[in-house]
Image (cartoon, rainbow, N blue to C red; front, side, top):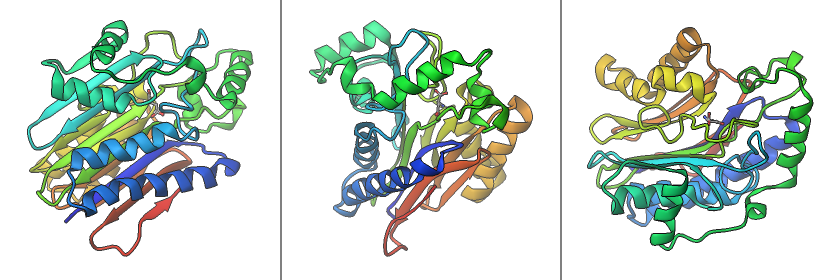
Length: 307
Ligand code: ASP
């Protein structure tokens, strides 16, 4: 069954941002579904849906990314082809609107899995990936948010992800991700992010780490995660969810719930995960106040989106 699932972050999404998140998810699901519907590949569907969200300033990926502790945007992304177990990822890159496309180039045109910072950008230039200015990625909302965050003593992104009111601040976690299954039975998954607000320069989160942010294996399923990366990496969340399907014979929903329970219980973490099994059945779970998510498959008449 052709199938696609998308997320646009899990955190305490404020009421006035719900509509934009909802709309953006619908557009990303529709863009990816269009590819699958025409007989395109899962990889193309994942890249297309994520590019759509990287362009949308609503999300913390590409345009709209967070600002780090020295006022720069640094982004991470990864993509995985569940047919060939091929992976590509980039971390701490700057001035590129579509990190997911660069991650795919690493997968398809280099012998490596993960390139970071200057080396990744050098590779981007060799691959004729277009560069943009820092201003193209930095939206006023994020500069404003960064200035506010800098005023809070002992600010921690982890606390803010949970929506705990005493922080007086909601840290957005608008990372984007997608998992797709095409008509050939191939699964792909991808994730793209500007990371967490006010992160230390050079900080790399879970999103470009295969197994934590992204995982896909044709015979079992695929997953993409969002949330507090420092906790997600400790429970290798994406692979743990896929393992729930393979080793415990769980439904995608049950496997997603189990993964989020482990995130909370073992690593005191907050976040969300989307998953498809090998038949294209979707699953989603989160332990933050809200999660932006949506999906479409051959059993449905129109795409579903919710925040
Ligand atoms: N997981 C991302 C990170 O820690 C942030 C997010 O999902 O919003 O970099």
